[in-house]
Image (cartoon, rainbow, N blue to C red; front, top):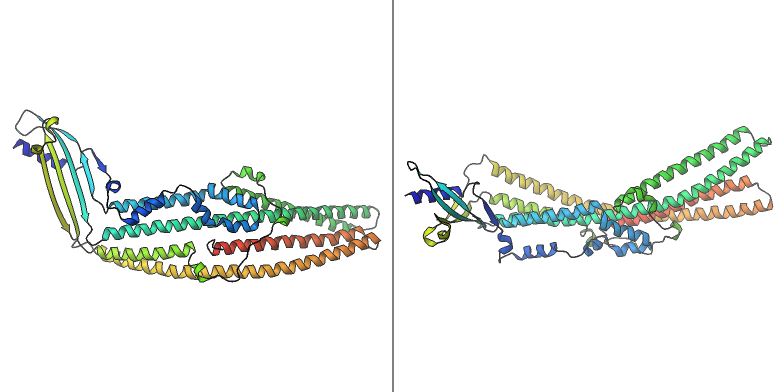
Length: 465
């Protein structure tokens, strides 16, 4: 009788958290692993980062023929912290998928429980050793757990698309920032020459004023122009410093290294690639945000199916094996073993309407995600069309600006001849030269605007140029 009581106590003990136990993972031991899960394990074990370079399409960036730019994009791929977080987010969702998949498999728990038992009315105590083992398995007859795994897997697949979007966005940011720095280098160079000429004009005006040839008002205007030019130069240098700091962060370096960033001269930069006049709809459906929106619609549909299956009963099997003996040596023997196997089916009768609310919530969420999918489609078309329009218009503007620059250059050449012939003063020649420098600044701006437009199209098509 005492032995029966002890066994009963031990059996109840293993159902509490007081017994030290350890879990055996059946995920690694299972030989019936679904094919799709094997593929997930394979994809998770990447040995290199080649897929990241494929995300940003490095071949396209080579069209700028700028080794510095290519190097900065590579450094961003390797060191940018936003990209590292995006990659880690993929790993998080992957592990969530594995955790959900584990719920489709049996769980096994074993433990060891030494005990001292004192029965009522007995002054002596009796020692015992127990080794309980418990196995539980929910029969997924209605494939509810399978659908839950599919739903979580869609999140994992969506995180991979988010990772791809992040790499494209960061590469675009690096390219745009770099080009704007190169533009500012050129504009600052031209602005310094303008300031130098304005200083020379001011000095000439002061000399003429001292000889009574110019009025005080003209001298003040010359000084105002010189000061204004200096102010513009300081603002341009401030913008360049800020962009250099931004570039350092993008490539994962300290902004203290901003002055060490090398770049090409704008005059040496040319884009050698071909920009299409129109984009096929097949490219649009390859955008990562479009593909993710599609995955989320699929996930929402699975969630509705899961919500419907919550109305079905839950069927589970459980098994218990308990070895109990007064001596450790005789513990694992058949005469000291207690075994049991059973099952149960549970169907909630009343849950306060939570299952109905959950189903309606899932359907409403599906409709919302579906509308977002439609919106993503329209937004993708809009962004691509906007990029194509910007490219076309900025190219036309660039062409007109170059014509204007050529006219200013010819005009400066004529005035230089007139100055050499003595028909105009040096002051007049310097003023004409400033007109040429101003239009050169506009040419530099328009050239970079065109390059940035190309990057905008690259981003709009998901790097598929």
